[in-house]
Length: 95
Length: 485
Image (cartoon, rainbow over all chains, first blue to last red; front, side, top):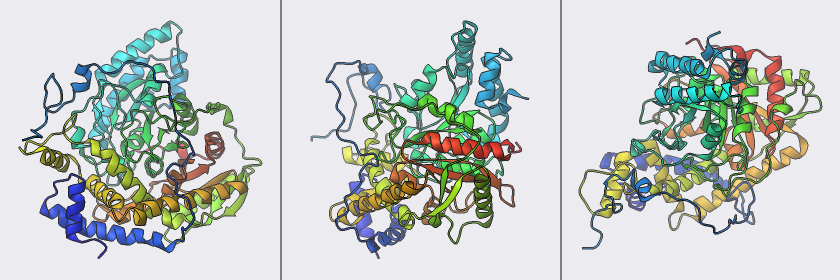
């Protein structure tokens, strides 16, 4: 086994996914098979090879720190699932 | 000829000659969508009224002699592009009612050049899939055989063009998501070099791989649409500040002096016999047109799928962290603390393939596994990219199949994610290398399903692959066949 069910539960907590029992079972099998497949990469010798994060080599892109138009509060809040003109409403964070 | 049968170029000519109006053209496509989309399911949102209003405005500009390259041309957008005022779902329940307050740059450029938005087309949820079966809005059906998938993730983009519901569409390609559906639907699709087209306002899947590109009926239309969207955008810091050449000017009807490489790893055992025969026939056509054919090797091809499914899922797990039910999108009705609200909203809102990829990516980035999986994959990516750079020392263009088989049946691979992933073996390496490639029709299977030819170019050499594609298209009739719908 490449991954155990308890590891899958741990990853689900990290990923903020409230998976049910059936999903955890199915994902344990799927992830095990996929991880066994990707293990073929270990056959390749990669010591001394630089990692590629982007295919087009580029350094930091800078722009002038200039004021430009942004969203109005109404525009920014228009898709909020719990409407409140004062901001984004969330469950109580501090008891 | 019905207006909906026209290519983008034919519509341009007809509008400019006042043979019909933009309203008439737009209405023809809107009616075509209404008549066929119960069968195809390519559209998530149809903008009929708005499109006719935009077409009316386009007719006024045409009458005033203020024609831009796309004035009055109706187009469809993959539902991954933010379009101000028109909802953008990414084919996910989590964005079911999302209406972006701004336009993606690629769409803004089409609008600025006069295009009319017909609607937003179906896709695999968050662009994760190769069959368009992973959509919260239902599977898309292939116009050539409605029991088959159209390919994915830009399945709606390819199917709507093949069904003549739109003359052209934009899609996105992270691992083959423009080229593979274009191949399966018998249309032309191009993935530009990473950085050629702005990704601003395109909902992110895997940011180092995603690229925007056109899906069209023929190669000339592809050049026209690429011209409209290519170029630097200060809002996308990964877009490259390099002027786009005149793509239409590159289209010539011969291949004299062009060195075409056949990657030996793209003609493997397991390649469908009809696909092999169609591609080999295409090689003979290119040779007859004056191309020099050379065998080359891309030795790390077999590792590309494994490399991709670590890098793409790692980037996806990070990109999709933003869907938390707080600022936009679905929020759970379950009462709980903040973390429970995030976790339930995400579990309810995402489909199973999206969850699978978030989980895999989270695992690959997690403490203790980062070096073994993510960093290893990034090093393998260097080897894959170097394969292409080495091959392009010897040849100008690489030629091969797009997909190992023609379109498969709906449901056929849905139960086995790994088999589905392997259907992208010939397209994924191009995204990892960051270079450009396209698919164009090169034949049909014994069961009359389209087969696509892949042409891969050097970085930023879109004009070279368009030239080769145009020469091939002029010498063949495949692009003239239409799905019987």
